[in-house]
Image (cartoon, rainbow, N blue to C red; front, side, top):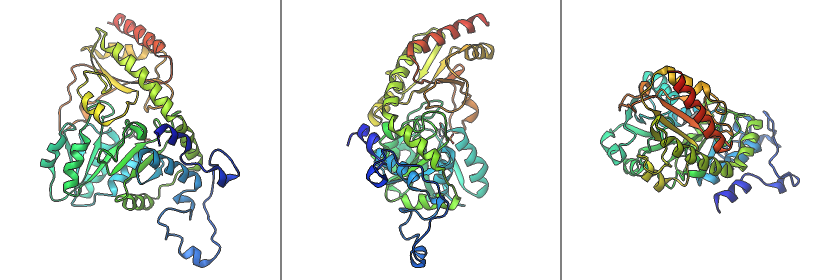
Length: 388
Ligand SMILES: *Cc1c(COP(=O)(O)O)cnc(C)c1O
């Protein structure tokens, strides 16, 4: 089935709910069993049925089923945030004495978790050059358990050669984990590219309306129970109301992503033509360093990219961002609204140097008219100029 058809049909079963189009919101803690014998065997289905609220209700399962089907994975589990999903995915693979490889372009709270929680617990965390490709093989040690990827990095947009990394890892029985928030289950076929465990901040495009926090982990069959049991051991539980919101966002994921991608390409190309701009970092743009691998491995691009200003003082940068009227200043992305932040990347690199040659601004392009957004950027450049 085409992904757009999956978006409309997956995770719902009207015949089960008196014809209701959407899976209703089921709230519960306690689930009652007809006999003691049934109760004693409640765990036998290994996370398939409903046994206690913390493990999910039919609403949670509808979302999990839908996302697993969209990404063509084995199964999915919902978590209260994207970061919770990253934490569980990593904790499923490494314990004291293990070696973990993490891409140097990784989302900074992921890096903080590795440095502040994993390292003091005796795990050797090694950051690697995101562009290492098949060369990852040289970094493997006898105690390497997992490689964590993030492609493209959500500030610098370096595209990783995940198939090459996965091929090297698979030959040694090392798990490949990837933060696929940018690629989404719609634009990046993670499992076909060799990923074992695909992690998403559903807060971004899946929820899509900046009104709920959610994480999702999708795995292939081999890795499912290990990850699912780790999530259960951490005690995470997701509200059925939030799952309902995520499922509502899921239905329109395709139209939003395709529309926002077209706008983002238009804005990125416009920015590239501006004298104030030194570089645009967006794999969907021809001429971008990651364009070839992106074109090979992805079927589309999130509307999130960065651009580097010509060397300018901080004063001009803040004048530029503060002058924006349609772009909000704030964390997150993937909603219907446009956002701008200053990407302070340099302080977050250890394995590689990141020196783009000027201040880096990250934009998320929402559902506004792209020409209105271009006018907004245009007037902000004018404001920045008069601030010198
Ligand atoms: C936002 C984000 C996360 C964390 O997700 P939350 O839902 O905010 O916890 C992880 N990875 C990337 C790439 C993100 O952009």
